[in-house]
Image (cartoon, rainbow, N blue to C red; front, side, top):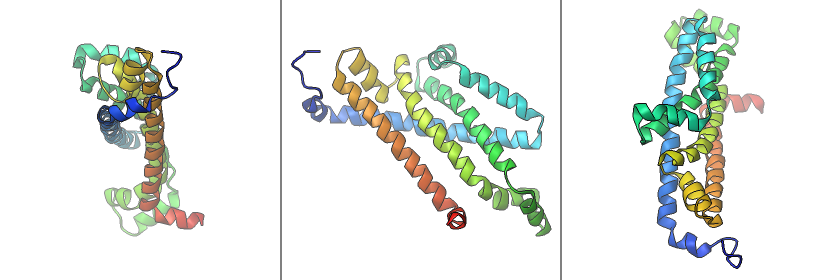
Length: 220
C-alpha cells in the first residue's frame, strides 16, 4: 500500500459497484440457502428427538461435534465428496447451523406449559393439530431466536468460503483486500457483512413480532 494513498478509495468503490453488488448477492444467496435448509433439517431432527427422547443426546453429540470442527477443515473434508463448488460451501454451512437450530427448537417445544397441552387435549385436538395450532405458535419466539443466532453466525462463516474458490463478501475481504494489500476492499467487505448481519437480525425480529402479536401484548 502506498503511504500517500487515501484511507478509503471512494473512486474504487464507485468504479466497482457492480462487482460489490455481485459479491453481496452471492453472500445473501448462500446465507439464505444454508439457513433455510438447516432449519428444515433441524426441525425434522427436533421432531425425531421429541418422538424418541433417547435420540436427543445422540443427535446433540453429533451436531456438537460437527460444530466444533474448524471451518476450513470441514471444507477440506467435503471437497472429495462435492468438489470445489457452491454445494461444498452450502453443505458445510448447513452442518454448522444444526446444533444451534436443533437445540433451540427442542428447548422451545419443551417449554410449552403442560396445562396448555392438557387444555388443547380437552378441546379435542389431535396430536398433529395440537402441535401446529397450539405448541408451535407458543414455541415460535424461542425458535426464531435460534434462527437469528444461526443467521448471523452463517453470515460471518460465508466469508470463509472464498478459500475454496467461492464468491461472497469474503472475496472482497481476502482476495481483493488481504492478498493484494488493498484496505478499501477489506473495509467494504467487512462493513457490508456487519450491515447484513444487523439487517437480518432486525428483519427476523420483526417477523417474530408479526407472527406472535399475543406475546407482545402479554409483555405490554
